[in-house]
Image 1 (cartoon, one colour):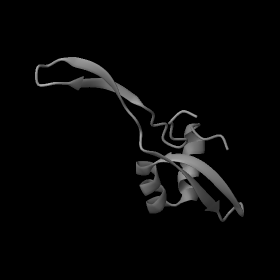
Image 2 (tube, one colour; image 1 turned 90 degrees about the vertical axis):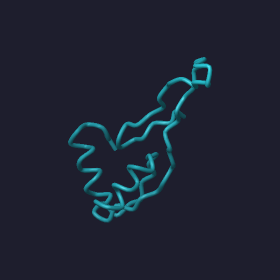
Image 3 (cartoon, rainbow, N blue to C red; image 1 turned 180 degrees about the horizontal axis):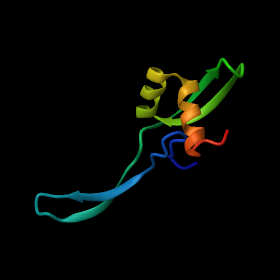
Length: 79
């Protein structure tokens, strides 16, 4: 399974390791992704989402229902 946040769409980025001699080799920056279960009180059910930790902070601040509503409006989340 690829490391992609289901809400924000954050994914792996690529860049370079740069040494003191300015030699460059390719590297990847993985997104900080976790799998988390959320309870949606309006629907009375649990859902499992793969989210980044930054998105998890947003969910804690706004609430899961508001975040899912915004994601569905933008067409990011289809569930």
